[in-house]
Each structure stands twice: as C-alpha cells, then as structure tokens.
Length: 114
Length: 109
Image (tube, rainbow over all chains, first blue to last red):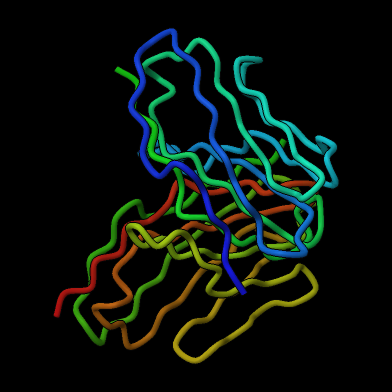
C-alpha cells in the first residue's frame, strides 16, 4: 500500500507570493490533516479535512487555507507569504476524523520564504 | 485548548543505555496518546500509542506509561541502538492532535 505523498518536496518563494502544496493520502483514508513544523515549536495543527469538509481548524491566519477533493487528495494554500512561513509542512492521513486514530505522515514539503 | 509540553529537547545516551522522554498535557478530555519517530527524509512514523483506559503498553524495546491523574505520559526505550537516533514527538488528542515540541535523541555507538 502506497504511503502518504506530498508534492513538491522543496519550495523556495519570496515574500508576498502565494504557494500551493499537495497531499495524497493513503488509499481509503478520508481524513487529511495539515501541520506546520518549525524548530522548537513542534507540529502546529493547521486544519483537518474529512470527506471534502473542513472538520477542524487551528490558530493560523486566514492566509492559510485548504481544500479536499472527492478522491481525498488535499491542497493547502498560503497567500501573501511572510518570512515566518518558512517551515516544514506535513500532511497526515487517517481512516477516522477527529484525533481518534493513527495518523500516517507524509515526508513533508520544505518551504523557504526569502 | 490542549497544551502538550515535552522534555528534554535533546537527549544523548550511550548505545545500550535506556532513554526516557516525558510529556505533560493539560486537558483531561485527551484520551489518545501516540508517539512518533521522525527521521530525516523519511516522514514521521507511529512507534507506539496508548489510550486513556490503559496505564502501560510495551512493544519490544519500547514502552509508554500514562498517568491520567498527573496528566503525564512517558516513552521508554531500552537497549538503545544507533538507529534509534531521531526526533521523537509525543501527542495528545481528543478532537484533534496536539503535539509536543520534540526530543532529538542521539545514541552514541
């Protein structure tokens, strides 16, 4: 069974630009969660999608948005990039929604904002 | 919301020694506590988890203990090996996952 895939693996952008990251969950998983990982901060929850609906949202500004397609693939968009958005963005897929079951993580997208 | 604190941030042990990583959480509603191992370029993998109706769980060299009263849980790795070197994250969840800040474990051969 293929694992969670994320594309691209690396991105370099400049301030003010926008970026779209993609995540393909494990086949059969309908929940996709997104996290931002920065040194010393651990994983900060961005949002979770389940069956194309946003089920939960973290404390990030509205510049961070996401969506999920009917095949469960998910995209995350960050508009008007800031230097502080430089981070590793991880997505995780799960059979169940709401923090009740095992999450399977992708390798992440390393975003650098110059 | 939930707040998870993890200590230490870095841990260096000699091969064969034991390693212990501790996490505390704040919300008594949390009922699921997984531990993840993150290796560079490999993503994060679940290594062990425990639910709130259990006090201890063991899987070969890895064990997790949970104290619901004190709201803390710990990861224990015995007979450490160089391949255990990685960043370990704890998490607590009830409606979503709240992660600790991570522990970088270095096992010296």
